[in-house]
Image 1 (cartoon, rainbow, N blue to C red):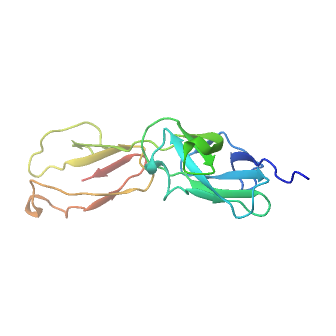
Image 2: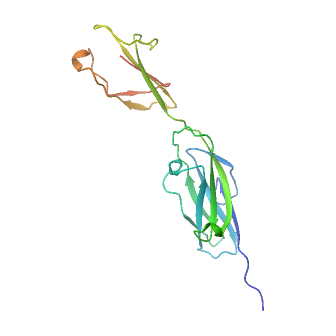
Image 3: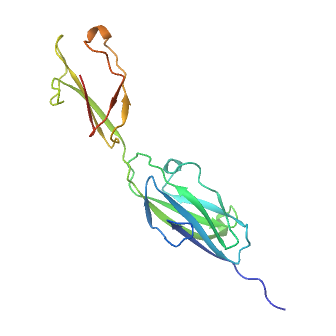
Length: 193
């Protein structure tokens, strides 16, 4: 009697391509990578479960993470993992992906991890009033007939971002010009007369 049963093998590569030939140890926010499962002696069309652990959460990814990967006739299956730019300062986070033949962690066949580099930072906004059109200095009051400039400074806000403005405590009768309802940020700064 010939022994035709063989023990399946599993390899998981977190990488830049679907074949698993370019493995990655880290990736920047806003990028994507592939989780490629390379097997031997696993039947084609077999669905394997993907389990996720680590320091990440759902806001770190675009859409829902795939829960399974299907093995092709070549013994390889892959899924794309899109990492989002969440604009939170949180440092490097580690994502660990495990491949299992069931939803039970006792059936994990292989595990691999990747670091997600924190390239997006928490957006910071601040405002103050100035008597200068360059935005220098700070004032807390202005006389009628004088000009006050609203100075908005930001950190980690993309160039050209548009901010919507709302006002309270003044009416159009208090102003010479119309009140702007939005501004565009350039070089982390906007100045409104």
